[in-house]
Amino acid sequence: MRSEDDPTDSTHLFEQTCVIIPALNEEQTIASVIDSVRKGMPESHVVVINDGSTDSTERKAREHGATVISLPINIGIGGAVQTGYRYALTHGYRFAMQIDGDGQHDPSEGRQILFPLVENDMDLVVGSRWLGRGDYVAPKGRRFGMRILASLVDWRTGGSFTDTTSGFRVVNLRAMSFFASNYPTDFPEVESLVLASRHGLKIQEVPVKMAEREFGRSSIAGIRSAYYMIRVGMALIVGSLSKEDS
Amino acid sequence: VKSFIFSIVISVGFLMLTLRAIRRRKLQEHQSVIWILVALGFVVLSLLLPFDVVGTISHFFGIAYPPNLILLVSILFLIIFVFQLSIAITKLAARQKEIIQMIGLMSIERPEVEIPGRDSQEGFGTTQDNEGSE
Image (cartoon, rainbow over all chains, first blue to last red; front, side):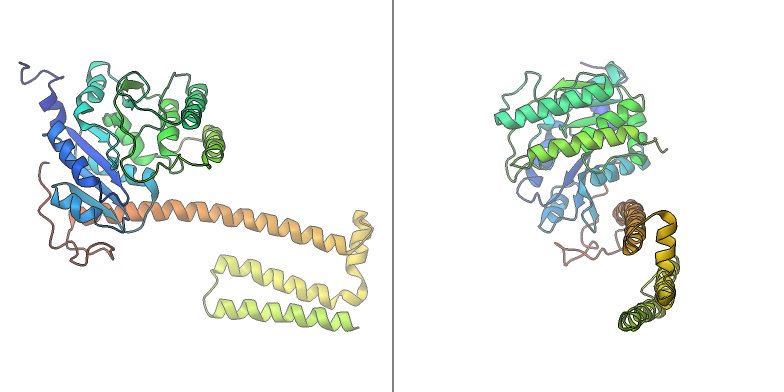
């Protein structure tokens, strides 16, 4: 049994955690994602950022007990996640966890990715599908692309990342308030790592399971992936040129 | 003489178009100043056509074929102008994102504010019982 003031007690951690689920037309999966978050982290507060969905995402999310922030116009996942950070910040949460609305991530692992925040004093913890947990398989080309992305990010940050496009991550108050006013919009997952690292935030990857997307296509899939890589590369270089505004 | 009349007609026409757009408030002040200057520039250039001003200036810059001077100046102007527009769009996009986020966050605090929405005809009033654990 863990005691009340054990800082790593999960009940205690979850109570201070705001789970942010960015969702664009995820009516097929949003309900089960919310349910599994509430099952895996019962004390956490679930916020769905409905990024201008045209289907019943909003209604389903409300019916399953989530707080829903509906954006009147689609602003992209970066802007949506940032909205979540702003919400978490103004509502006094210590941690903000991002989970994709498509069922790719397993909320029962929330505990594992929250842990390093308190135990290792990390600012940002990213769940990686390539660190041995789970049996995620990706087409060769995609996997190759993700390696290149990782080495690009490593080059900009001096770290050693494996899964830079992972949308399963959690931040502490420090990273939360930084991201609330500085969050990239073009390739938010990748760019935010570089941005955070340049800001001096401590980032750690932990192994997680990831499922193939249940519905819909990843924005990285398809023949445009080469073009995507070039644009991300450019964005990272351009991002490094830009001055930090805070 | 034909080309003289032709260019005057075109440049005066352009000036009138600009003024009309300003009167109908289709141009911001800042933008309209630029376009009035451009339009006036056209008019002056056409009026000066018989005096071969362009030829003299080209000669001064060592440009052998005078129309090239006009092309050069036009292209430079366009590049700078498009660049300025690109900056303006970036700024507008950032502001728009900010506003949209704000609207979303405010609709949580004040559920009675209705967002012109998609999915829900019932609006927000019906579903405000989700402000649970805080």
